[in-house]
Image 1 (spheres, rainbow, N blue to C red):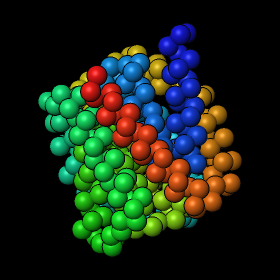
Image 2: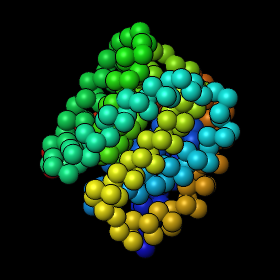
Image 3: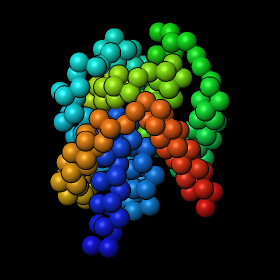
Image 4: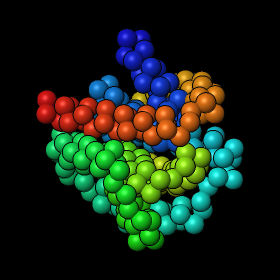
Amino acid sequence: MESFIPFAVIILFASILQTSTGFGFSIMATPFLLLLFEPKEAIQINLILSLVISCVLIRKIKKDTDMSLVKRFIVGSAAGLPVGMIIFLLADMNKLKLGISVIVLVLTLLLIFKFQIRQTKARDFTAGVLSGTLTTSIGMPGPPILLYFSSIHTGKEKLRATTLAFYLFIYSTSLLVQVLFAGTTKAIWLSSAAALPIVLAGLLLGQWLFTRINQRIFRIFLYGLLIFTGIYLLIDSLK
């Protein structure tokens, strides 16, 4: 029970973020789940619950989805998935988190200082490659996609819908790769099942919140979340 309470709080807040922003679950849940579970368990629980959320939400926001962009993300991520799995199996987790934290913090600062790029098909593919790599390695596909969307000034409706559509592919494929190459355990699936009611509560709260966030507040929140995640991963990797 002592470990379930922080687990429930993490899942609830991460579910609210995922529903209201389209990207928050893995960014918030994975670092904190690593405090409660082994890396394989934390990543697979994150993948399972994130997939459930994407399946529940995608039908409601299908009209805002840029399917041509989703397809380019999928093609790019297919190249990144095996790379991420190799990193997960071979790399030291602390060094991996250190590298990710530095990347997230540097790119977030560039965005805060109005760094902009022009969207191209090649950059769409590159964002997909990076997202696929991060999904199978640490269970966090969000940062590359989120940073890319922010730098090309994508509206919150399109951002949320397109990322969720892409997540249907990336989470299901990454979970399959994880199970095949890293294995899985009964505890992972039982913990995920226990979290489902909490996820559903977070979905309802997040959907209500989404309609009340304007674009400016949305971007401030986005940057704050990225900075927090980067700093947290940096501190955790130096322990």
